Length: 210
Length: 202
Image 1 (spheres, chains in turn orange, brown):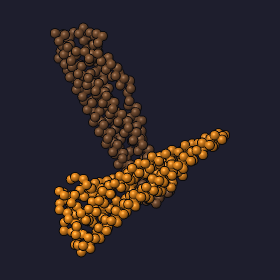
Image 2 (cartoon, rainbow over the protein chains, first blue to last red):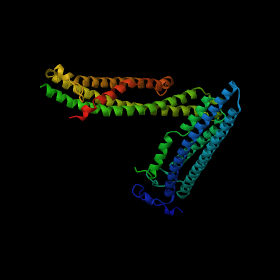
Image 3 (cartoon, each protein chain N blue to C red):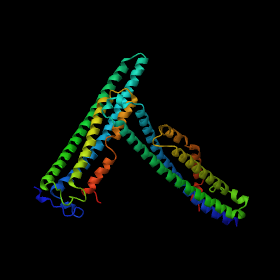
Image 4 (tube, each protein chain N blue to C red):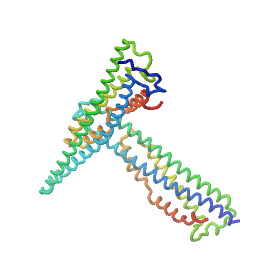
């Protein structure tokens, strides 16, 4: 129960954080770790996606050459090799996406945990809220808002990546391939200020010194 | 009288060439960093071009209606970051140019001050280990001119670049490369070889 929530002074004694404060602080650390994991997967996925585009391009070049000259059995063997290599890369990208799905699922879980903390506070303080903030200045609802914003960004970005996975190996337009790669790399649904939001969360919860 | 003036000049010339040697290394390394940034700029320009060539609503990405604006934003941000870094590199190049210019100015000033006591023989005399004062002054001035012109040309090119101007961005890496002056760079390396014994002697 909430009897253990004692936050004396988050600035001086962050190690004494218990109860809701403890949960929120742990959540913040989890958000940080999940975002780091996501970034690593993004880089990995970008390398694989680039390979897919290059393989696709060399396949098309092969086809062009074959059509313009007489075909030979050695070039068709090369084709088969190229196709299986492409399949391997697509499989790798699928694996990256699967891992990203796991990350976003954990993010959703964090968001729900935060909602639970808010509901508990609502119940305890009968809608009047805490008299003092759990950490420095944020009220409990702000943590929930941050979780929701982060989760929404990453889940929309995941949908985009899933679309890219489905389409990348089947796209003949080199411009569109470039747009897919560009979208994967630059993550348009994760605005730059998301990183700042995370930093703010880490500052507030005492993971980063003020 | 002449001997003393030559000896004083030699001291300052040694300092200048030592400074030129370290400046050249730094210049080359900063230019190498700029080349990498130019490659990034070229890549970004390619991405811009591709985005212009695609109508998102006609592609499987149509399910993300604000994707185009968001991607444009990100590309703009990334391009801006590269341009800012390039401008920072320009400050480094400027500081190298200024250092060489100041050094060469100081040498020439000293020469002017002692010109009365330096006859033609004194300034053209050379040995196996020591080039003539005249030659060394000329080499320093050539080096100083090279860095001055190079900096001006590269700075001018960068000033034409805007994050939202695709045409100039696309041609930037090629134009940057065309400013390379391997001949002049080799001449400076050559100069430093020629003065190596002079620098070691005292």
